[in-house]
Image (cartoon, rainbow over the protein chains, first blue to last red):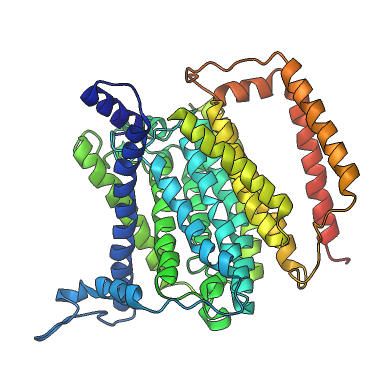
Length: 360
Length: 162
């Protein structure tokens, strides 16, 4: 279901040519579900994160027990209660803050994943826009959010916010390079930037039993997946790469001064960004909507299930990282990126090229 | 619909470009620049140059604008610095601007423009890649060497003397 298809459907209904209202209606029809996907993702992921962290620390996490108004069975309504609380909170803007930029920044940050998700194929047909340059578009939109982070940190007029924003921007800009380079290796293999074509390249089997995913294609693409995944953890500022929001030194980093719904927008976009980077990992390396058992469960409905299932697994792995690893130091972080990942990713490009020419 | 969205993008580009020049606060100029660059990416999309639009966003917004913002934020008390867009020599400046506008319009009217077909081209990226590797290989390599030189220079400058 792309915007064009909906416009064509409108045209066939009304029997007239393309008009402005058709375009607007088509954009709203496709945009609203995407927003709902991002919002639902945040609500579910916050709940799962609480439960995962609790289990890892031998606690039980949010629970509802006994009679009365509690957070539901197993604390399932905890996030809903949190969201309500955030909605009702006072919206504080510090008097020293730069008001206009302070208000603008959360929207720019949220815009980035919202723009990126428009090109993500959820299964064979469910995709708002099947772009020629799909994977490049998604990566480019990812770099958009950095501006919002910097503005948020600067506009707050708070030294911790500014430090957090600087660290965050430096980290995201650095880790975009190994992430991009490892995707270039795959693009070389597939010969297309189109996300659907990248997925179609991965249908079928490999050695008779493995799904023909890029991650299993050759040793170099296997390594590229790990470089991309670790870099993407750094790009979304999660532990062990969470020095931009390091609670023990920076209070909360770039969103220290935000409260209420504005703070919730930061949270929403953090989880939305997780969804985007894991979606890219799934599409590029893990076969997108293709089934892990080649030939079985291959309908469009199952495609949606497999896509969301793989994303869920990767997000769980990110949470597992968060509650397992300690935070890196700034210099370690930069060392890993510039002196380990970037040379490895370049080697990967070379290796994939040689493999594609030699082995095929 | 195409006209409406084209007009919107045009207004966004020109309006925020004016904002870049006229705002008195350096960081506001940078924020306006964000929307100008976005608008230019939009104009590329209208020319079926989708790859170029992506490059515009990834390089100019994700790279150069971030660097500009870094520079602004690391400068001590940037807000109190009077960068003074206050105009000097308005008469001469105005005349020069008018002359420039006249000159550019003259060129725009004289140039035999190549019209882009309204059909979506089958591939955009592939063509760019082929051209870069065949007809434009030398400029491509020269640019690469230039960038490599910049990279080595930056590493040399930031290196501790040991």
